Image (cartoon, rainbow, N blue to C red):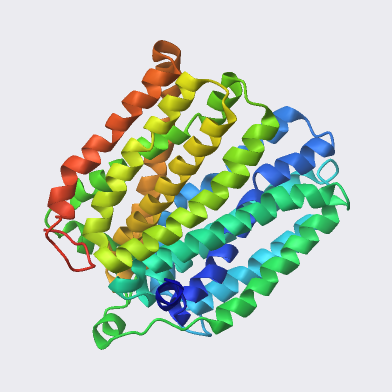
Length: 417
């Protein structure tokens, strides 16, 4: 068993994504929840803290400048790794400068620098996503997606929970400077990662003008049969998972669990379960191929929601809590690994940055929109019926699976019909 997993996850181009995933996830909390905690401790007006949510806009708008990262290669270390290294250095510098400021005294500068940090972070995400899609052969896309998610989650734990713990023992400025240095250290990992190979067709088709940079990736995508329906599939495949996760914390608190229970089980234990699930999902894609793995993931994501139905009926039962959280996060991890591998397989290597940014943005938008009506649904139906009906969120994706990932298609790639 262990040698088999070592063969899947021990390859250089797969293992390298662990560090890149960590680099991608580290800045997120430092411009979000951790920054909010810093400002709260410095007695910044809560209304101003709320406005800092706008700092996250670059993550939702990254498709706008993604074509530029396809068009203009960095002058060092290769087309993709050069941009990764550049954004890592810029992120490190931004975090170090941010750590030298005081939110009450330099609030506008903190806001501007946090927005700039989020911009560099979103830019890094663009090129890391493109790198991952290009460096992995189809047979390793599941493993690469899983390893990336593991690194990303560990980074969020570092810049989130660990940063908060450190802030109890040292100044916030020291915390941010430490995170800035850690961000800079991620550059060392980038040097160890192999540059994706470029064939003659890819090299020749690199966009030569800004017009081609913007339009070529879109026309290339929408020229394929079923392109619009495929976008709909991308938006709905993880709908049931998004519905179930939208109000998990309020659900557990209302059920009678303490904040410690929620933090320990849903956050910490849930993180471990997600990591295990993504690794299983990566191995599943390697063994079954992307199409069949999507079928398995679709049903796992749907029926794992029923664990929360059981928890809602059982009440504040700690054993039920652990079981429900473990099952939900485990199945969600399997689905994430399979679906990210699927998204990578859809991208043309000539325009990976733009096309993956488009697909991932649509996936993020659907997750946000799915959470909007959940409060009204719970108020009208109650928790047991809400989680029961959330299973139906999987139906649109399952209905479209035969078209875009037919079970009989054994090869590891998934494509348009």
